[in-house]
Structure formats: structure tokens, C-alpha cells
Image (cartoon, rainbow, N blue to C red; front, side):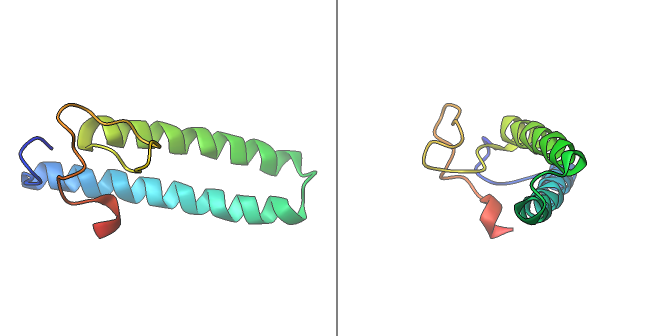
Length: 93
């Protein structure tokens, strides 16, 4: 987002679609995590958790390469120039 937070309609749609996919997959991870807390030997659920975690990482890398960092404090890398001052931030949408 080198143009300080302004999007074309198509780019804005891509931003929200990808962010929605990340939110949905991370919801599945939370639910699987809770399930596995009470069913720690369910190998099928463990495989599903690991596959879903990989999907989440892939989506987040894709988002960050297109739109900038998702997480701060060293959990996401920044491109040059420093991009945290650009909006919208993921938690603002």
C-alpha cells in the first residue's frame, strides 16, 4: 500500500476477501484447538489442525506480500519503507 492507504475498488475487494479468508481459517484453528484440549489423542483432528495451521500461514504470507504486515512486535516483517503508518490496519476493518 505505497499510496498511503488508498485502494482501487478491485484492490479493496481483494484486501477484504483475503482478510476474510484469514479470519475464517483462524476461527477453525481456535475451534480445533479447543476440541483438542479435551480430545488430545484424536489423530484426525490433529492432522486437520496442522493442515489448517499451514493454510493460515500461507494466507497470511500472501496477505502480507500484497498489503503489508498483519501483526506487530516482530511477528511480521516490514517492507521498505516502514509500512505500519499506512491504513487500514487489519484490526480496523
